[in-house]
Amino acid sequence: MSRQSPGTNRRKPPRPVASRRTATTKRPRGNRTKAAAVQRQARRQGQWALAAKAAMTLVTIPVLAVALIFVHDQAVGAAVFRLSTIEVTGLQRLNRQSVLDQGGLRLGRSALAVNLTRVRHRLLAHPWIRDASVDRRLPDAIWVDVTEQVPVARAVLAHHRLIVTDRGDLFRDPGTVTAGPLPELTGLDYMDIDPDSRLEPAIGNALRTILDHQAALAARFGWGAIKRIHVDRDLGLTVYPSQRVRAVRIGFGHFDAKWRRLDVLFAQWRRIAPTDAALKAIDVSGEQRGIIQLAQVAPASAAEKENNHADQ
Image (cartoon, rainbow, N blue to C red; front, side):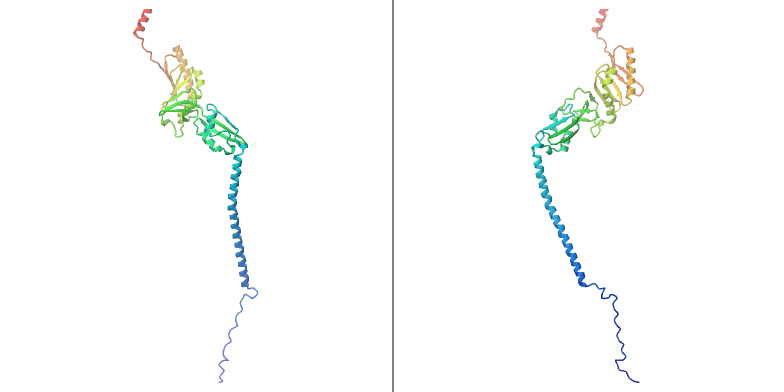
């Protein structure tokens, strides 16, 4: 057997397999680096632009504020805006100067410097002012319209003198305003007043009904002006007129029916007695009844008896 040379039986190494990515599809490394640098530079430029805008804003705002303050001060100090007219309307019991003092208004002040909201709040703090509106009429005028409280009665509670309004509100009487002659409301207790300083609905409604028809009732029954109204949470309201009868207990609700019942009682009493001198009280607080209470007649003294006997 012939011996082959050692190198003849060696296999040739396999040929390397060509990569699927050809040389034409390769992205050069240098191009990727350049694109990233461009992006970084654009990002930095955007950040610098944003910082510049923020700096400009921070500088512009104070400058603009100072400019506006300067313009405002110049306008406020201008003579054209100095108040030459303050018109006050709606006054019934208050006087004009008291309203101006309460609102802090005076002539010569700049109309632009007047805080309308603050003036209105100050006016509403006055007990006799129910509502108020304040308008600025440039260049040199302020218009104030007030709505005063409407008093219907006086009351005393815990040694405090109170005014009762037509809406049932109560406020302490400062004594600076003359309310005129008003009936006195007695028998009030803290239980009769809600947290908003207003009479309880049953009492307030009954009081408004009686006082709203006070003139008509006086003409209808001839009992004159009402001097006093007594409040009782259980029995209702009792009216004390100035003429004809001492007291009329009315109670709560069903007032039209009670006025008709009073007509009947007064008509029947006229048939019995020519005058009302003996009437002490009338009670129509019940739903279907009316009660007349007579005044007690004092017995004649001994001297009067002797005089009568002598005359006979």
